[in-house]
Length: 240
Ligand SMILES: *Cc1c(COP(=O)(O)O)cnc(C)c1O
Image 1 (cartoon, rainbow, N blue to C red):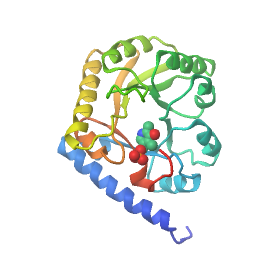
Image 2: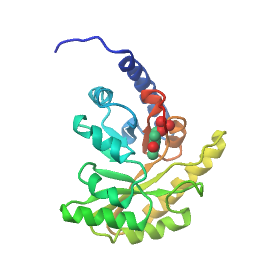
Image 3: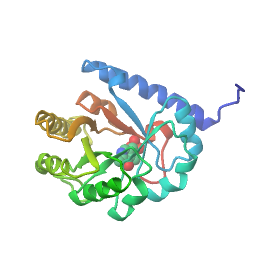
Image 4: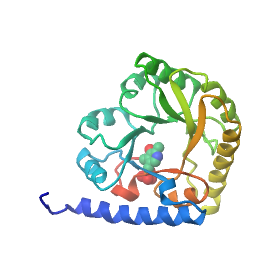
């Protein structure tokens, strides 16, 4: 293999990645888990295919995109070794463009969206793993199921052909203090545990996706097993 010099952004990625891996291992250890129990998904919005591919070559095996147009524009240049998740708001009319391209849609925020995903998957003889997005802070600006609705939503969506509910996802409100965000993470974890205990047909509560750059370590200590990290891996973006 020919050696080449790393670019500055590749070096920065490597430094960031090693810090994050260490923090993930420490946080997991705090609650008796191993780093292997935690999935680190690289949130790759605004990151170009070249840097994404470098990240994949260094061990990133899950990537998450949240804008349909951006994703479609760069997907063909991204190494197929990493699993692809869709993590952003998805309009029903865009579902057909996405279902063939990802192995999980984390941001299912309505029965209507789940139904459309199912319909498009049945056409392609496939089953899409989905997470239900919970609006855990009850914020007007955010989509997602209300905490009180989630259990019923899982039951209802489990009956939809072409999709399989695999867990829950949340983006809690921005909090200044750790103790505030912990409340939301705990609430999500409790929901996750309660629904898991119901053992509903055609659904399995395997993934609790919460925690981003500022709080993924806290999220892990409070039950997350899938964290979505962008800025802390790749540096600051121009847009959220
Ligand atoms: C951008 C994004 C992230 C990552 O956010 P950072 O703060 O950059 O780590 C996680 N989840 C979703 C849904 C996102 O859109």
